[in-house]
Image 1 (tube, rainbow, N blue to C red):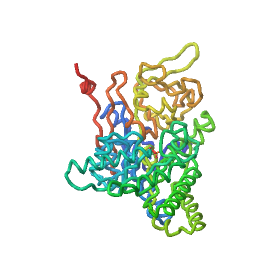
Image 2: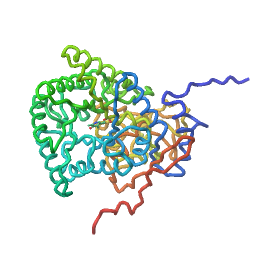
Image 3: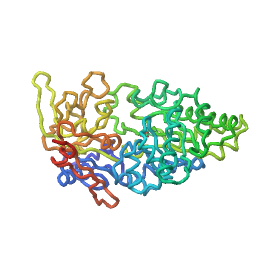
Image 4: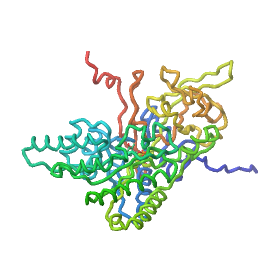
Length: 479
Ligand SMILES: *Cc1c(COP(=O)(O)O)cnc(C)c1O
């Protein structure tokens, strides 16, 4: 009688979503290798049910604090139309960062009063579009920009021949709060390019109250940065906004309708920690953060309630709506990239085995510019022990197109662990890569961009982005 040792499911699996079936990676029951044979490699795969459950986790957090909370999906994380459609159908709102994202949000069917527009450098045309649509809030990034919004309102009114309709604005602040995320992802330091400094807030409010026929100032906003692993920066940001809200009320009599706590709820990129000890401690804490959104909301409200009691301002807190702008936490772990090993080599001098894939940093820009860690598995041999070390690199003609830290900063593992004897033709998967990937990909090296599919409930697969053809490489060239 043979004794079968039942090995536990690999640590990266997520029941009913990411599983091993017949030795292959399966996404909501759909075989990854079948997807690649149908849609070619590389391929983005998204899970509708995972997007929905990520959103449900956020909205459940809102019920746990018994406050009206509105969620505006930060569409810069992934603005594919089918993704936006899934977010819309899940019942939350949307945040945009450009005229293009505004266009996409409106086109997919978000109502104007479901849209917030952020950005440091909005053009006159973008402001005109936001004003014409009549969106929920334009978040102004400087005192100067208040005047730009007023001009846009005047222009749009003049164009339509109707009296101006005040645009709703919120003031974006930069609190002096550091987080334990990458400096490039921290937005709330005074060295950051974003927002109005605390010392100018009152002046900014007075300025925005000058022309009530042109603008209505309805809120205040802070985004502490992306992938923020701790509660404290959120709570501090909330405290700061709340104190400004009270001060503004006292000074001007004006009551703000909302406090917008921005995005930044982290994703656990180290669900499988088998390579975690090869990351610097600080990266490990950040990438492996497991912060419950309800903890963020509870702590923010606890602080606000305390300070409201002290300031006798409970009535103000009762009236205020709380907004969040989650991006990464909705889409990152709902997407992955399937990539095929196309070439293999062994360096006699080092003994290293190199696997050369078809997914470069043109698909995963943050793997290069932030040295972001995406856990790599074999989709072809998903339940084989991953204890063999490989150098892994993408196809681009650039020595920086590697899955390790070429600058020897140690910010990525030098080797990736995969099963023994990986061969060309095998399919690998970069997990948790649904955010800031598809939205940032580019044609470098004349590489057609990949297709993307969405696995629906019940295992139906829809193409949500067709793969580029060579003709797409010529689309905008003029010669
Ligand atoms: C990028 C961004 C977000 C989303 O951040 P995540 O880390 O993806 O949640 C939200 N709000 C603003 C203003 C942003 O710039």
